[in-house]
Amino acid sequence: MAEREQKKKTTTTERADDVVEDVPATSATGEKLKAELDDLLDEIDEVLEDNAEEFVRNYVQKGGE
Amino acid sequence: MAIPKVCGIETEYGIQVLHGDPNPIAASSVLINAYAHDVARQQTGWDFEDEAPGNDARGFAREGSMPPQVETHLVNTVLTNGARYYVDHAHPEFSTPECRDALECVRYDRAGELILTRSMEAADLAAHDGSQLVVYKNNSDGKGNSYGAHENYLMDRAAPFTRIVSGVTPHFVTRQIFAGAGKVGAETAVHDGTPVDFQLSQRAEFFEEQVGLETTLKRPIVNTRDEPHADPHRYRRLHVIVGDANLAEVATLLKVGTTSLVLAMIEDDISGSRSLALADPVTAMHDVALDRTFTKPLTMEDGSTATALAVQWELFSLARKYADDRGLDCMGDEAVGEEVLKRWEAVLHGLETDPMSLSRQLDWVAKLQLIEAFRERHGLDWDDHRLAAVDLQYHDLRPSRSLFARMDTERLVNEESVVTAVTEPPRGTRAWFRGQCLKRWPASVVTANWDSLVFDLGTDPLRRVPMMDPLKGTAEHVEELLQACASPSELLDRLSS
Image (cartoon, rainbow over all chains, first blue to last red; front, side, top):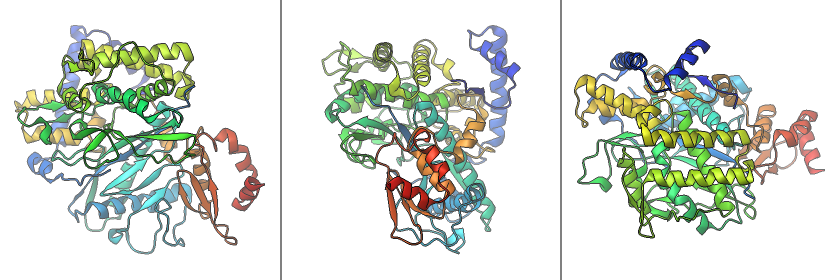
């Protein structure tokens, strides 16, 4: 199981940081996680389809399988 | 001894046309043709120009001179990585080649995503009317229409089917606690009268029977399709229709890996002291999807109760002991087997103590975390369209729109190996022979399917090469032979001598 890597553009150094986050969150890492989530939400506000209602309504598929 | 659990995943993708003809069959054909013409040809040197229309439903796609925009016949291609890429019903479907272990299956499932993404890009470039194709790796449209992500496992024909059904049903009902892709709301009648905010699984509510042959109506938890694509006297292919399509690699590894282990134990007739038979598997499946606290007691056939988590702990313990007693040859690769067991245990522990801690491993947790944060930021009710939009867009394969791609989920296979898997077949199954022949002699292989290749040497009648054993035709078996043959006729001569 040698193959493993972090998603996105993280470097090896940043990977080590992420491993630290897997232990119970201290307030500092908790803050960091929250900040990351905030950044993600900002990005989602940007890329989410403009008219959510129409976007969802128009997504109609035929059953498959 | 259990036989190696050769495995594969076939995924029907959702497809939508923006600013163009909404016909999904035409759109799926355009998508796959665009890949076969514009992408795969560059990589593999395939030449479709002079081919005649294929007469084998599982043969190569053949292309005439018509532009893709008006191409509507059902496309059916076999790729050099041994995969099948085709139009099924009204969806583009990608079937991975036969994989030797669960981690390899993750890699080829990811290669499928990359192939679909490249197909979208190629189709959009070729479109002259400003239309755009969008592909989603999900399993329902939120309006009661579902499409599948099926798994396949090689099994020993000697294992009685009744034992398979009873042994695997508890796993299929409960594995969604880690393998579910998550869904906002509900869309069938099974939860009528119950307000549903979020479910662990996209597919759970579509299952209505415990066992059956159907896949589109009255869907059964255990599908009885008996189409081994291999020697029917020795093998069975268990066709599993109960799962969700996963984007999170750990979820895919666990879905395939734990199921492989459970099936191996069924072949070896291993069971625990406690029966895991559920009194009503179908209702249990629906209930498990709604329970994010993992406390809902399921009624067992013997009158006792157990939670989904308890059933999974029991299966894990059996598998752990099975591996310790008999080794993990059945998993194709022992290290992969150990990894599956390690992660299975860690995920069950996480679900028990702090489910949201698994947001980098499991799709439903990643999606729920996103939905909850988005809901809180904008003060939304669960029935707000924007939450359904976030749910849908989680599965969008366009890098510019995918919400999943923006989450920092854990990866198990590196990107380079995924890119390689787009064109190279797995080395440890017959997919290797299929893929290598297609790569070397694309003009001579007129049709291919799971268990045979048909060659046209230009002189004789067509020559069929059967591949009835998924564990033969591997690189180990035939790499030397293929390298020694300068032409397909030499290969066929040597195979028949």
